[in-house]
Length: 184
Image 1: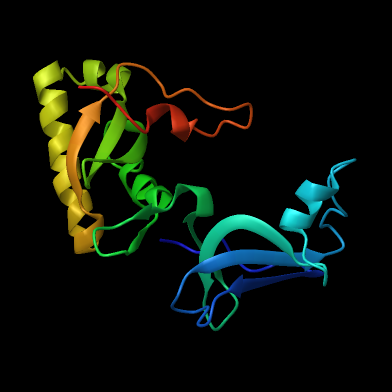
Image 2 (image 1 turned 90 degrees about the horizontal axis):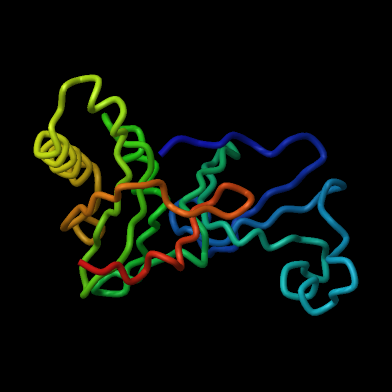
């Protein structure tokens, strides 16, 4: 994955990890631009703001020795691998979403293996003369290419094509919880 850059001036970032360059941890930030707390909600404030002013972002990442931040995913989205490894779905999705004929994707766990739900670019596929079978074949080719970039425990076992975009929050994030148990 690519870095999202360094902290902006007058802002500090650190990783809550024993080895922030190699072991992902929660991204913490501190600075004049960080909120003072949630309005009339001390409990929520106490959950995200530490006593020394650091904000728990809920994002997981690593930081290299030059201060470049690499976001791996959201702490709430982490999937535990078969031997307890952390799998970051957003990391996999960001690679797949840049492949041909892919609009968006979502990694879920089904029966102990990883499945990639995909909303393809049907419009482009039609313009290019691809049939449904051709598009399914292309998604399988994409899956094989994707798996070449992934560790063994985070490889995608199957793809399911979705006929419409995934439902989103007002912030345009996919409502992951709606897709955790997809029926055949």
